[in-house]
Amino acid sequence: MVRAVTTSRNYRTHTAWADYLEGCAHLHLLQLEAAALHFDRVVENRHVFDTRAALDAMSGLVLARQLMGETDAARDSLSELRDFANLLGDPAALSVVESCAARLAVASGGDLTPHRLWAQGFREDPSLASFLFWLEVPLITQARVLIGEGSETSLNTAAEMLGAFRQQCEAWYFTGQTIEIATLQAVAHHKLGRQELAETTLREAVGLARPGGWVRPFVEAGPVMAQMLERLDLEGDDGSFVRRVLTAFEPADAAAPTEVLPAPAAEPAAAARREQPVSSGRPPLDALTDRELDVLELLQGRLYNKEIASKLHISTHTVNYHLKHIYEKLDVNSRRQAVRRGLEKGILQHSQT
Image (tube, rainbow, N blue to C red; front, side, top):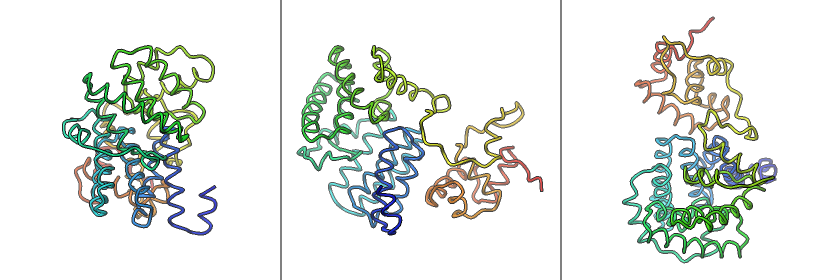
């Protein structure tokens, strides 16, 4: 509805809001490429958009790329978020950055030492504005870090914090944040050995998440969550939802959900390439992602960045991002060199014309 109204009037700010909200929806459904596409559009308009929402969209882009397994891309997006927050010079904006950095470290299994210091020193009075519908809530991420630390003291502190947050979010009817918090509560209780309470809390989280298809909070919680879900004995719609969530923990190639929105159609050559097994004499293509391969094939056709963006339904910002990593992975410095190296490695096919 927002998209239909704003597009016709060409209101950039309102269109950015539409992209932000669509990005959030796709992220929670674990439709990660679509989420990244919408967040990327917000990033391009961040200087004319609501500051808090722009920061949140940039945090969402970090999270989407991390969940896609693109750790380097997630770090690049985090660096861009930090530059934007430094430009704003607002302590609240810098708190969002530190929160996002800590969340990325938890999700990627990185070193939590500097983030523990942030979590220990962070102070904020919980309020409606603190939680709202934001993806990056520093108070919740503070609890994530405490759970990641894993000591009995930190786990008890996290469980106590999350219990208080959940009461407030339920009073405000913030269902999304309640799902987020309940999922983390279940993990904290599980690590503390409170298995009955952990299972009860997880059942509640599943019951809240199923109607809207909120898969992401469970997947972000990591392998421990998959183990907990496997032990749940649920039937009916809740049981079907749990099975759907469990498939999302599998490798991306094996677990693409059928209900995910279809990605933009690949070029015929790209589709054929992915369906054909790689022969023993051909170098593996694992170094380049599917999207990078799409961009490389369009480079061979001598398309400009705007034309590539249009064909793949992505932004020019994203095209530049993919080009940067194509150059790094192929060890080249230009578009022409990238195409030549692709032909040499057998990644690209020589034109038949």
